Image (cartoon, rainbow, N blue to C red; front, side):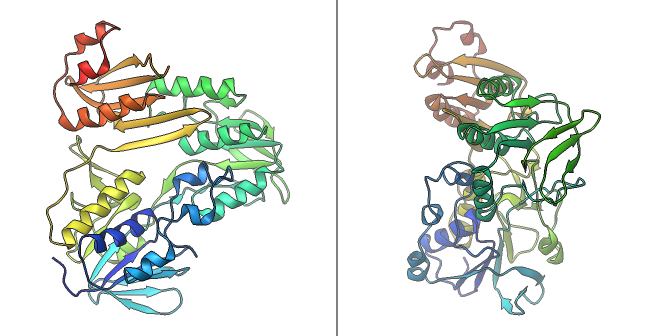
Amino acid sequence: MITNEKIVIVGAGHAGGTVAALLRQHGVTSAITLIGDEPFLPYQRPPLSKGWLQGHMSENDLLLKPAAFYEQKHIECVTGVKVIGVNHQKHELYLNNGETVSYGHLILACGAQARKLEVEGSQLNGVYSLRAIGDAEKIRIALRKSQHLVIIGGGFIGLELAAFARGLGIKVTLLEREDRLLKRLASNELSEHLAQLHQANGVDIRYNVQVQALVGQTDVQGVELHEAGVIACDTVLAGIGSSVDLSLALQAKLQCEQGVIVDATAQTSQEHISAIGDMTQRPVLGLTTTLRLESVPSALEQAKQVALRLAGKAAPAPEVPWFWSDQYDRKIQVAGLIQNSEKAVVYQDPDSGGFSVLHFAKSCLVAMECVQAPRHFMMARKAIAQAKPIDLNLFNSAETPLASVLQ
């Protein structure tokens, strides 16, 4: 258990804000300093492509906790300042305002950044990516006057923004370099359903395309494709994934690959440093390898792991990874990871009119993709965690309730 060592958290996002609160909840009395490079207290990022863009949420609605919470819990919040260096031997952090901050235990929660579009013209006005409040506000303002939005990348962020823009009546063209949407993240069945959903709502989806350049003098006026001409537009959104900045981790001599390597308690290769959230490469329930898992539930799970470890309490049970997305009137929920899927079964939900794609490996459920099927999703998280063999012959009858199959 940590005693009087000062805890410094670098990164005031969902992961950083949550671990600060959980440390206090579990009885840690050490001084806590939370450092973030944005001028905001810790806030939720998922609503940026949902409620925030739609104008249904204010800045205060996004906050994880009000300012009074941090004051009452004696958590020092240093915002608008970037950590530019670390000396793990001296236990010191160096800030871009010239200050030095000492720590007893360091928690890195630096998150990820939107991957930059590396083509000619990417610096033109009217070209955006989405990661932070500032990005979302610029996009919201731009879409008020946009006539034609081109989205580069058919991932969840791109699809959610396509749905939002179509709701505003904006013409939307979505460019995907692969032969289907969400190729690395979703099954063929879910990809096809979402493609049909977006096309039915007027989105022009183009597959197997490569962006050559963005065209324009000062403002973007079009997207030039490789051997496929130019698409005229006035707004471009790049949703091409994310990357992590490992510079601090490498300065601290932490073991890194795709992210900072951590164990099942979010401990790094250095005793006095933990790491959580999107920047980590972590063990995941059901997998024999580590991976970088970008999701709020994953960040919250790791925040809990660190808080309990530093409080001297038992480690929590590993959780099933899960994700969600809202597009038009559809709620998509995914439990587990489809990477290990050997067999997929589609199950219709007669009550909601939705459906689920169940993924099995060696007769055990490893993942489920649910569309308008929240009951299926809750059953899936429990069944995946139990890892019990399931009789797949039960799916031969459409009359068999899913609960009976998964029990």
